[in-house]
Image (cartoon, rainbow, N blue to C red; front, side, top):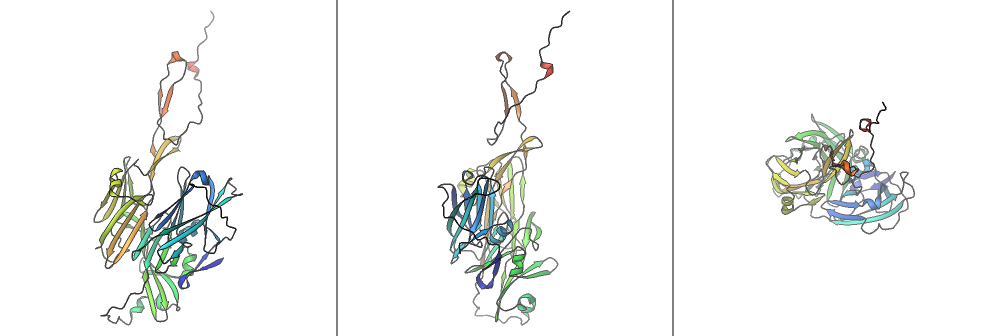
Length: 431
């Protein structure tokens, strides 16, 4: 195990695979990169990666870091493959191995290994880098990704107000976990139901699958939706995963406390044959002290890209901001998504998939929160039994049969038939 030391004494323990890095660039046009707000995207064409490939992250020392699913959650990465075989790699700009310059510019370098067989030997390896700018940050930003939820909070120490009044001398009794801690140490306290608490050092939290990091101006916490300390909660009919936590940093004369609570939807979609409806609560009680918030901006998008009102209208999407819920409606089959064929119990069925996003910026008090949800949606299977149309003209002595309708991802592989003995020509009998 190689320790990777971060700011303020936080130590992140990672499995690091040190190996030779090839400097070969991917073929032109095989990899597309895009900056999508606080997310960096790499799209890898199927013609390039084929069926067998692997993505490793390269740290600032040139070492390869092999990404397991657990490490991807801790560090802020996700990888999906669409039905055409194209791979999409997403990384938070504050992921573990992104090079951060003043919380404004971020650079990530990965190694793409392409294999010709399932044993994954004899790889051709390529190096791909991308750089994104993301600034300014809101005081708090929350990212709900496919496999993790992330909260990032500005950690600057505020100035003392001129009309400062001495706090109750026993204020620290409310946080014995912090006051009892050693000097210059980070701790995180998870708040559980029935006023229970779980206190962990950063090393303990990392061992339990959490990601904790600091940047030049921020502190962030990252967790899986099903982490041990997260709690399921229904808010305005929407199932949510809620992680309530407070992160402490103690110096000899000061304890800094940062509210690092995060809540992300785990569902909220409803389907008909014609329409997808996706609901997200406008107000999230785990994140705000009062139901009175001021919505500053709401935007929707697809595939990580925000859409302007004209595009939303042209695709027949609907975005409605109500007092309790933000509702997105997408017609099944609309531009931006795709259909996929399946066979279920020897029956032809189809599904429709789309990857909408929602960004809600609100203000409660002087601080702003930017809340971004990436929410891939696939409809339930929709049966489409093929219809056989027999256009055969017996005199032509040629079968003419139409079978359909199928989606373009279906191809004819084989035709087979059986002879019906009842249709065989009868032989004359001798008298």
